[in-house]
Length: 261
Image: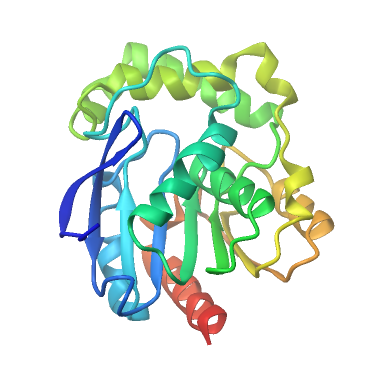
């Protein structure tokens, strides 16, 4: 397909909004950004633009179904929704945009989807992964934070804030929150996939991340056979690209350049 600066991509029955910044995949490597559990194209802010400028790569950002201006999803989401995304949507999306060479950069749920994809697809086009605040298994403190997020959504102006970015904030919020708070999700664990990743990984995590501890990093260091680099940022919570954008951008841009060298 011919990529424009903004548009919609059809993957099966889904219409997915996207932004593309910089050189197209036939001219330069491409960085594909996968957002968090309540994220979308718009919530990346100007971080993709700065990433394109710092690396010389094209940057493709999209909203998964249920988020932003993309198609809604049926609720409740299946507890396999991240595996489903990595298996059914992401491979078709990469092919559709003409992805030739580059990296996947995922935040939170997006990082988990990225890890699942790389651990189940030996994609020769990938030069590396950047996992921002990834989840490889559930933790009690993370589940507690997700309980608090539901309280905030139902009792504060959080819904109104999310409505600025999502055409159906209930679809996005309850799709994510409902899956994570399902008792069956306590068994969710993707550490097995880590052993099958064959490209270098950079993990960027806030030392004060309310959704995950350094046990997530330790799991990657223990299970991966590929090189794993870590940027653990003091005083930062779950969104390093928003809370510490300069240091996060520098860490990612340096890694991208080395991975592509």
